[in-house]
Amino acid sequence: MRVSKRAIPLLLLGLGLGAALLSAAASLATLPGSIVDDLLSQKMRFSAADLRALDAGSAVIKTLDTPIREELAYAAAVYLDAPSGRFVERFRDIVQFERGPGIPQIARFHSPPRLEDLRSLTLPPADVATLRRCRPGDCDVKLSATAMRRFRDEVDWSSPNAARQADEVAHEMIFDLIRAYQTEGNAALGRYEDGDEPLPVAEQFRALLASSDPLPVPVPELLAYLDDYPHGGLAGAEDFFYWTVVDFGLKPTIRVNHVTIYPLGGTPPPSGVRHVIAIKQLYASHYFHTTLELRFLIDDDRRAGRGTSLISITRSRNDGMTGFKGLFLRPIIRTRSRDAVRSYLDQVKRQVERPAPADP
Image (tube, rainbow, N blue to C red):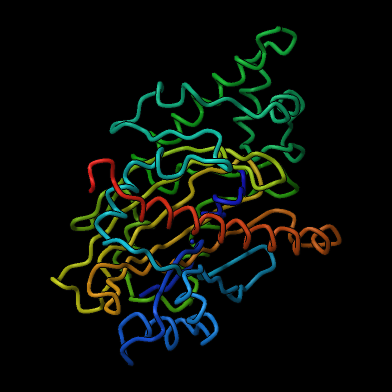
């Protein structure tokens, strides 16, 4: 998944939780005790230097503590000179919102999903080359044992059309995953069996939900919904699914995500938080066992009611972070992840603040 400079989203973001990363706050020369200031400095523990950087228009990122070495976590913030409704409207058009240098391929699924939604997905050439040799416990792509057998048995690897056949198998597998998840929830996410030990994806995701990170506002009902989906309800919530190929400098990575847009009640809401957007990873072909990002869109009461502060909490569990190999890879992954978050927030700011074609 391209843990691309824009995607860690990414990235790679009540019960308390944390997962990938965005956020914002603006002007320090503000009213003391403003909602956003209080959230950032008191509850989220951003420094005075962070607030000055935000006031100057920069995104800020803070690394969070994690219980295990395989986990990375960040809180991030950025000020958007636009109302929160514009962010939500443009984010719904996820293809336009996300596509860019780090996202070479992306598409949103219809409701209900269609196999044709995956028509434009092509596997990275390096993945095609390795799939023919994949076996449980020995595969360079994150797959279940069943998926490995499908690639081995359904692709004629001696054919000049082997890459196209592999793409078709991948399309069917991702389509089947989405449909099963929409019926069975986390139980459909299965296990990655590419390494020494099978890794149940649902267990990894629930470990992220158990995090005790401070959130701008508690949202236990949203976290319970993500855990229980599709068996529970969440009033006012809107769901959609999309896939993407991301590239943050290591291996291009296919990711499949479930998005929930959750409006908080009240006009204005007492906390200042208008919407919470959850991005839950369902599948990644490399690096990421699981990822959860929560984005909080907050009325910025320091900007005459027009601006929005975006605060993002992101946690992910990843390969290559432990052992002798992890001594070298972990700092590289952490640095690239932070750079990707910052780059992505800059891109979000440009996307949201640009005027619509019809605007004067």
